Length: 364
Image (cartoon, rainbow, N blue to C red; front, top):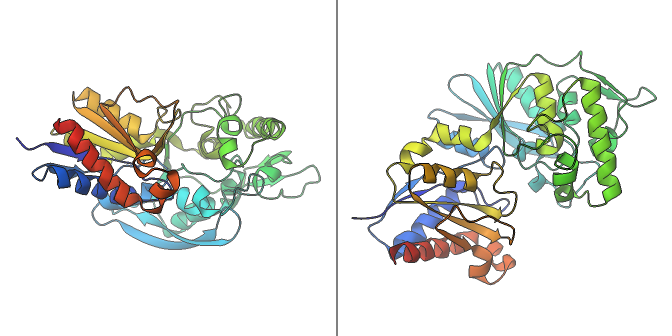
């Protein structure tokens, strides 16, 4: 009997989209096992590729162009997605994401553009928002996006604070009276971290955004705690620390947090597809110690285990602290290509090689 393979990767951040990655893996597998059948289900978890995943899964979805202030303040031409039922899908990655900054800007990167895109969707008259909040460039506590929606954050002199974490550290008053009314808002988050503390936004994710000094991390953590006190939010709320505190800001606006991978999987019918499969292949750019916390590969692996189907993971790199015990096979593109630079220069080629390698392993 021919092998049926479900291919459900996340995007390889800044390198190749989830749909392109799925196609390349299937092409490589087919080069070894020509009669294999493939079911492509590109995934997302609220980060990069969330709008693309919804666009591919919902007939009649329409991209609405919008220009916003990017994470560093420069204009960014992007789009939000209008679904036929009046829902808007907006992702932070394409408005205020880390891939939009050339070099890390820990102090002045912010989420204003994300808020502007949300405001544009509200101006359009949408009745529901689905917001993906992964891949943030900043740790601004979401004050940029809330300001774009009508909030006002001021310093000790009563002056509106500057952008980013720098401004966050100066906030002494938060006036939310001008906030636009929130419709039904569902936030897709790829993490469950609280806002503050050792597992909080600054401590865990700040270094990825350029906050590397322990003194600076502690300063931003204190500022996030002060913000939570000012707006009346529990800093221990799971998911509040997502996207540099955007999770907390959106909850304060009235949103509901949901696991991003689970919501996308429901939309694209992943469980039904896995039920027909012999093997499930997933992946992401970097499979590391954080990949077990709400990320696509761990979610897909758990779904495969529930269906008693073998799973494999392909990643740009697989770090030493990564837990690969859920997978029958794992392939690192960096190891296949000989270096990270080589794999990133032509990710489709090395994903095809990875697909071929998986076909050989599962056929053995």
